[in-house]
Image (cartoon, rainbow, N blue to C red; front, side, top):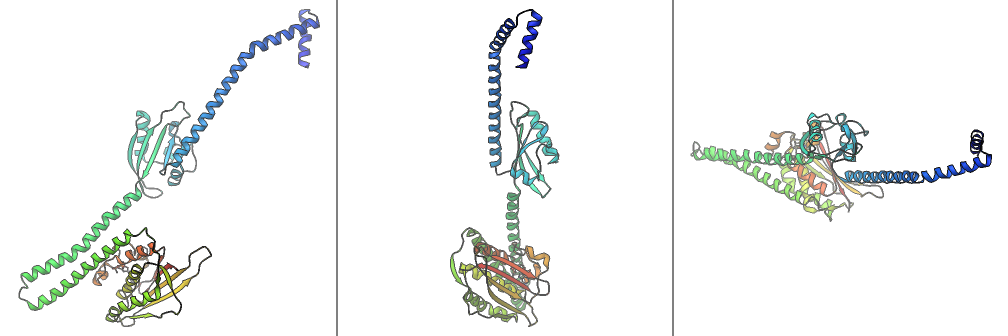
Length: 407
Ligand code: ADP
């Protein structure tokens, strides 16, 4: 208002118009100006509207592509200009320990092979696939797909880097190959020994009565060894085939352990080892499958005898206990198989349930072992949603504990 009055005074002073004429002239000029600038304001408003809708569209697109990338189960990066990290999904952040965006890719992955491949894609705008081994933080193997993304302006994404983690698949392939190699090796040794004795008996020892008796004895042992191995391999494959089915029978563990002890008494007597199982008055009923649980305790008690104390002081003891849990958790039964035998050095313990792993290969072979017993045992217990724990010290015996769900 003050400003308008000032303008009018200035106009009337400088143009010798009366104040009312000046007022008229000012209003006309202002209206003219407003009339002339109306389309300009409209255009400006329209431009702002277009810009707003463009920004909204870009925001929306960003949300969609971020969600898309987040939904991919593999690690994925999006690189912006100068190969700066524009986006990394949760998997990528976890695997490559990414704390913030905006840094150059070379600060995250230093492997020259990947950086060169990204440069090549930037140049050629053609997608590329490479194999990558990352050694830190842990060794991982990837197939990496790098793709150029067309863009409208510089702030848009430019390159997508998709990692397919092959570590687990490679580990399984290696395990399968190792398993076949180990099984073949285990069978080849007794077969070679059998064939050797057959040749000797057909040739040089043809008429040697004493040698024949001795060799036939060894051949019987080797034959039994092969049978044990084939039996264990079949058990393992059967257990693996049923791995996804949870057993649901009720198994009376007192009866089952009693039968296990009975069937192994002759072997224990042969080794001069005392089997002790004081049957509890209480009931111990687990959820499980009787044949499989029987195999678990046969394996554990058999091992306790095989690797038991051989000076006449040896014993194998069995105990049962109920383990109480919180309201929501399943109650469990604990079965303990304890011996005072040769024991196991601590560095072997974590690997005992691996197929063909033995603390002492020669000793195991000598005792008719296959190295598969504890692998089968572990598989069965896992299928029962149970747990196997090993406590042992070399020279001081072992305690194998099995936890099973209570019925
Ligand atoms: P094996 O057929 O060789 O006995 P297992 O899978 O049953 O194979 O056991 C793996 C290894 O664990 C054995 O070779 C042995 O070295 C060790 N082991 C298992 N049970 C006992 C035990 N009670 N006392 C000492 N060592 C044991």
